[in-house]
Length: 422
Image 1 (tube, one colour):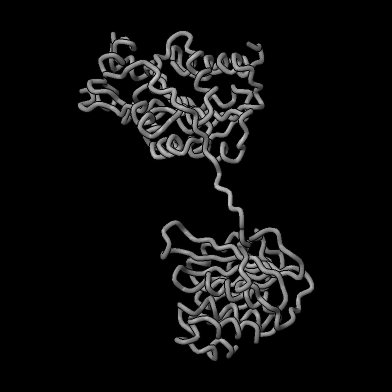
Image 2: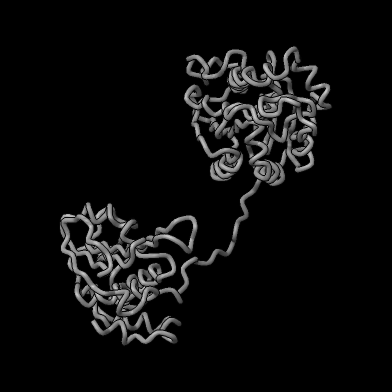
């Protein structure tokens, strides 16, 4: 057993008497027994009281969203694919409830990782709500009458899913040997540590003793399986083909007329062709022998609100997308103006093309007012703005943009002539 420290030595950030302290200390002891080095260990946590211990561990630490620690750990394990490294997940019963499918999938596929479930039978960080692990009769601040149903048995679930090692322990005293057995397992292992929350569980269930509670809940404290170790193997393709299809290549037909990279933002409303217009702009640039990138931005509620796209065109390869300060900005709707005001305010030069129905934002750029919506209607206003700026700025020949338009099915219902009348 080595004496290498895995904890900083500072005070652990938990309530007095919290079982999370024992988990952290026993984890360190188990890793010492196995002669691990802190930098050979990746600790993955998520939202919950257990996750605030990150700063105390001297290992590599990854903190994820609530319930997603097991999914993150699976990806890390697959990426490392190194038996000399150890991926450990800390999660609570709340996180395990939320991320149950990740746990089942991890056990089923055999990812090389150990999950330590801190089961204090409630959501301790958010006020003591019951989780799906809360046993029948157990009281919480938001369920003072006590749970009327039994909680999940995570160990039985992991056993059924195919985990290589599963054990349940009561989180009192020294249980480092149990953790060491799990940590030394090749494949998916899980240890459920039974705890009681001193802030909510103890106060809501006065006089209740943890071992008695576990016994009455019918949760057996034992090793459920020490199955034949099974490791996830990344499928190997012996005859890989390129992800780039020759059909996607754009053969230059025209010549671009820019001397330096140009950043262009289109900002309008959802459903008004902003993303399509940006795609046409990028494709026309490529048809003119230029490089192009495109980045789209819109709310989660697709179909309403703003829609914006940023296109960069250049004679040289571009290794990024988007720009906080565009050289050219086209604003075609009130939604688009709301989104683009900040970018417009950053511009100290360049040009803004803006629909005549909108107020001009504060900016250092030249502003050109155009009746985009009046001329071609709302749905085609963004596309018209692209034709207009190309005709005004001469990035490349208008014929390149026309060719891209004519190759798209939109040309079957909208005449290109309406966009060519600048």
